[in-house]
Length: 86
Image 1 (tube, rainbow, N blue to C red):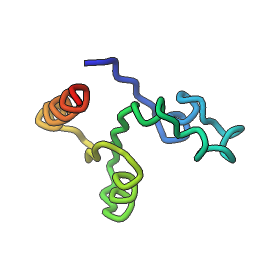
Image 2 (image 1 turned 180 degrees about the horizontal axis):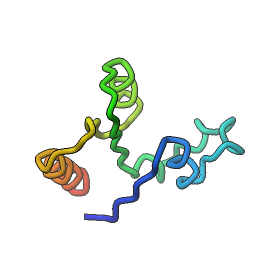
Image 3 (image 1 turned 135 degrees about the vertical axis):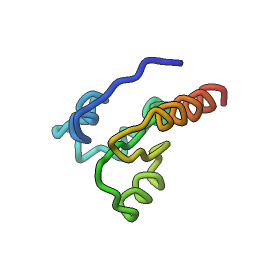
Image 4 (image 1 turned 30 degrees about the vertical axis):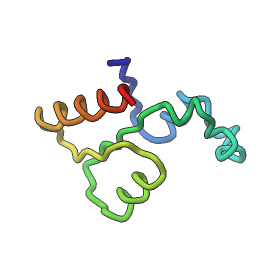
């Protein structure tokens, strides 16, 4: 399995991917094939179904509710391994 990179929040994740504030106006243009290959997993302590569904509709692979359990990590690992094979 590939490396896992974490970000403390969504803005930091965008900066890591080269989509920081200075490029927000062209965010849609930057969702290239490279971006689509980056699996995004949302982790939050807030369970807000509308927000979760929006994230999944926009391409997030999975939502995980914090605090995480060992079974959540196993589920995530299996899910990401399936993605690598496709």
